[in-house]
Length: 295
Image: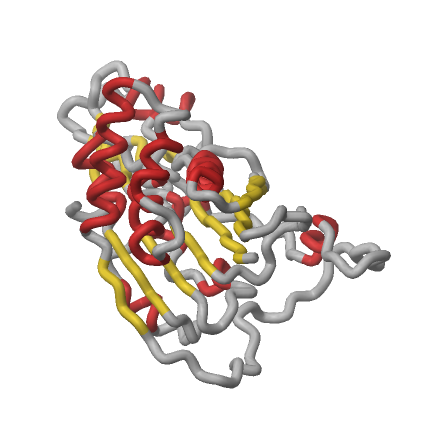
């Protein structure tokens, strides 16, 4: 049995990608299971999904703690070591990034590191940064575990018409534009843990069976998340058009539009997640969304 963990953000289709992947395994004659873990249910927040595949029925239904394969759908997550926690040495990493060297530098002892600029491809083909189908194409080529045709059949269960046609192009480009680098994993696993030990805030219950339960998540510290790291685009103000009405600060769901010393409202980029609500609500159209970097 192989285990896969998918990391993305709310709104990127991470859970649907896991479902389509499981369907593709089944269409290819294997058994598969899949389920999500949403965490805080906010658009843009980190989301995980888990998938297992094998030649025999899947009986295990716990989260995937020791993945053989990591599928990283969001480029902002790829350089954070905590998302690689539990990754099996000698496994495969498929990541949405333009900077593979930053993942290679994390010393994860992977056998295969496959990268593709899925955000650029998704924006070019569909106009949105939903990268799930592109990363499925990358998965097919990077692992060789599922056939591209089976993924196309699985996608037809979720999309129709023009949306399906666009996503099929994204899938194929993810397959074709994937860059694969192979490594020679070390025989001995590194002793150091990727995640630093944390002080417990809530004592987890004692395990009563050999399988870990969702309760083990309570050993994480409670922290204030700087949601600015979720952002791939930001609102930019054009002062000549601004009426100083403050409407953007009223509608900002994160409450991060602040009145600056210049008398204009500006986003606090430590918390602005780039949702674009301020741009949609601005009556003077003085705000527009701009990519964080040139795509």
